[in-house]
Image (cartoon, rainbow over all chains, first blue to last red; front, side, top):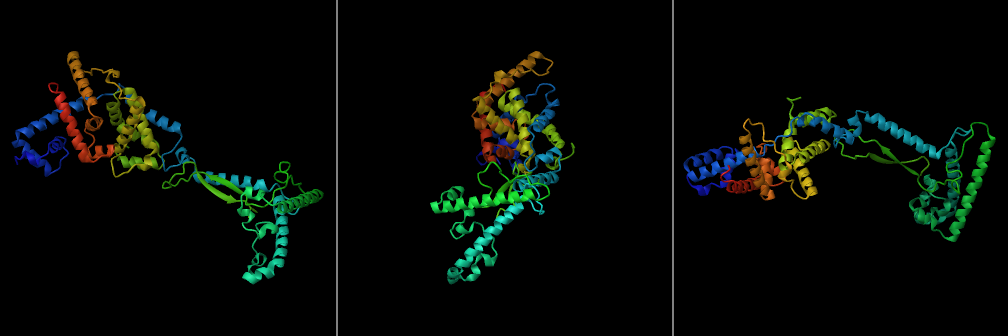
Amino acid sequence: MNDCRKIRPEDIQAYVDRELMAPDRSVIEEHIKSCPGCRALAEELSRVERAVAEAECQEAPEGYFENFGSRVTAKIASQGKAPAGRSLWNLLGWPTVPLAAAAALALAITASRLMMTGPTPHGMTVGDEYVSRESAKRQSAETELDRKEAPARGKKSGSSTSRAALDIPPLVPSETASQPPSVAERSTDEIKDTTPSQAAAKAEREASCRDDRSAYMEELAEKPGPAPATLPGEGLLESPPRLLRTTRAILICLPSDRPDASPPEIGTVLEISLPGGG
Amino acid sequence: MDNLSDQEIIDQVLSGDDEAYGHLVKRYQRAVYSVARRYLRSHLAADDVAQEAFIRAFFSLKSYDSRFRFYTWLVRITINLCHDAVKREGRYLPLAAENEAADNSADPLEAAVQSDACQRIRREIDELPLDQREVILLRADRELSYQEIGRVLGIPAGTVMSRLFRGRQTLARRLKGII
C-alpha cells in the first residue's frame, strides 16, 4: 500500500511506539518499507522518542531509595489513620467489637446514673420511685379527666378512644393533655410561652412537686438502709426534674471493622432513650 | 512477596497487613519519583511529592479500581500532587535549580556534552504547551500506554496520540542538529 493519504502520521507514531496491534501494525510496516516519506517520518519520531527518554532519565542521588520506603511508612504511622474501609483500631491491631461493646456499656451506665442515684429501702432506685410516683399521679389525674370528658368524646369517636381505656401512658400533665401539640412535641421556647392561667397552673404543679419531693426525701431519711444521696440537679435547679420531655443521650460507638462498611471516619452515632423518658 | 501481584498485596494491606504496603512502595518508588522529578525538575520537590503520593495512595487504597493497573492510579495521584506543587510555586521549578551530575561516564568531556544536550532537550520540552509537555513526559519512560496516559490525564487515547505527535514534531524542529 503506497497511498499515504490513507495513513495518518499519528498512526506512524503509534507504530513507532509499539501501540499498534495486528493487523494494523503489519499494514503500517508494509507501507513504511515502500514509502520514503513515511519512513523518514518514522525515523524522525523514533529519534525524538529516544532523545526524550534519554534526557528525562534522571537518577536520584545515590542511596536515596534505600530508606525511601521506611520514610513513607513512618509518615503513614505518624498520621494515625487507616486506609478508607479499615478502622484505626484494625490498623493498631486492637479488637474492635469488645472495645465498642465496653464503651457502649460504660456510656449507658453513666447515662443511667444521671437519672438514678442509688437504691432505696424498697429495692428501687430513687429515680425509679420518683418516676413511678409521678406517673401514677398523672395517670390518676388523666383518668379523672377522661371520666369527665368521656360523654363528649364518646359522641364523636366512642368511649373506646379513651386514653385510660387503651392504657396509653400519658405524655403530659392532664391539664395540657387535650391541647395539641403535646408538650413532648413542643420546643422549650413554646413551653415557656404560656398564658397567665397556664403559668399559674404550672407554678402550682411545681410547688406540688417540690412538696411531694421534700416529703418523700424526709420519708426516706427516716427509713433504714443505705441513704440515697440526692436527686439529679440537687442544688442546681430551682425545681426538681420533671418528666415533661423525652430525655435523650447520644451514644458514640467505635467504628465498625467490617471491610465493606463505608466510612464514618469518626464513628456511628446512635440515640437511645433513657428509662422513663416516655 | 516479590512474586505477588499488585492486587494480592493490596488485598493484604486492606485486610490489615500494613507491612505489605512497603513492598508496593519498593516496587514503584523509582517510577513514581521519576514522574515527579520530570514534572517538577527538582529532586527535593520530587521527593516530597513521591512520598506524599504513596501516603495518599495508602489512605485511599479502598477506592483503587482494580480493573486498571495500580501504577496508573499511582501516577495519577502523583500528577495531581505535581499540579498542586506547581500552583503553590506559581511556576515550574527552573532547570537551573538542578545540579546535574554529569553521570558516571569515564570521559568528562563526553559527559559534559551529553549533559548539555540533555539539558537542552529538557528545556525545549519545558517550552512546549502544557498539554503536549504532559504527554511527552508521561511517555518518556515508556511505562504507560496511550490508553493509560489518557486515564491519568482524563482524556481519550486519541487525544493523547495527537498531542504526543504535535509535541514530538515541535521538538524535532527545534532540536534539529542535536538529535
